[in-house]
Length: 490
Image (cartoon, rainbow, N blue to C red; front, top):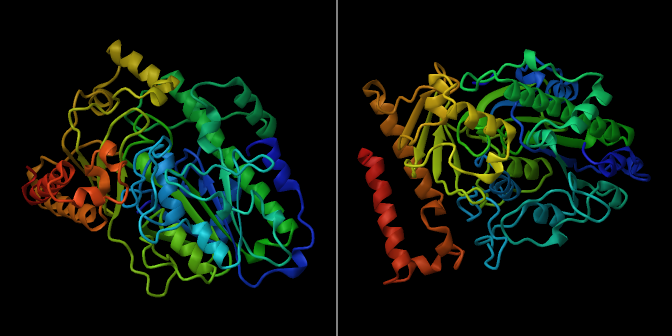
């Protein structure tokens, strides 16, 4: 429906690994390029303000997915889901940066991170790019306990001759632009491309004012997209130089949408819709797929392309399987982000989006130190206080409370401006999606209804199943409440 990083990292890309090209493995190498804080603002996705030839090349030589969505619009829950192929709400990793204190999160049942499976199959596993220096691994950001030994290093050059590798390349992406205008970033972009993106040529979503601060920020963000594309070019050049490209499956995706007021952390398409491109052996070239997929499908697809059977517990799907069943809907969830409590769930079909706000008395832009430190959010708050925002921006960004339910017709209203939840003409659609979301919450054992403080004391949930336990009574009450919502919305 929708039609690099540090000098150390660049040095790793330039460095040639000797002795491997002549012994090319028969099993394909698997490379994930995972980018921070970026939507599908690439020219192959119809972005017109900039050109991105290297991502465009991946799309032209591979398969481009236009309906790809994350199941969590913030880094750590998204990456926890990505590396396991499971919904973050199922494995208890749904709160941002959770499990970092005294109480830890452990993966349930037989669930293990994907690198464990690759390593067992004889692959050299590595994660590099952003944050990787010497022996330090690239960005992981997992909310659960994991063994560092599941990674052999931060670059494939350490593998044995002829050994296939699974490499994750973490790129800084939209975070390059920082929390506000950065002269150093402007200079860096100009040194690479000769000029910066012109703020006057930027097209903003209709709910953001064309204020100089917001225009400059969006232009800086588009320069992040250009720089990311440049880094992708460096990676492809290295693979070609080492005669590895023809036997390497390259995935390109981001961990969620642009970090903006209504983007990152929220379940609108600005926060959940991502680019997703695959190129390599076993992947059709020049193909565009418009069916809905979730980012957790990356795990099962990667394993299958490597000849490894995806385990039964994995909730993601092999996108290229002969028996592949297209999804009729995708789901997403947002919970606590840093100090800001939230509980949002959504289901999206090709035409409609349904969002359930479990805490409707909280405004969209409730206090959040991370977002409030951004120059764009500070400017929006300033314009709001001065009553200089138009009615649309006021309604969508600064309403004192939200509707418990939101429903959008994405064909007629792609920017999700008009909530149809109370429109009697769409009562049937509302009821259908309400039930669909409730069924998903139940079938996937969504832990979002359990207070985090209680869940952390027993991550396998056994305490909640014990008789005469207040926590169990709370869980049962919430299940009954959810069933009532699915029935009549009350």
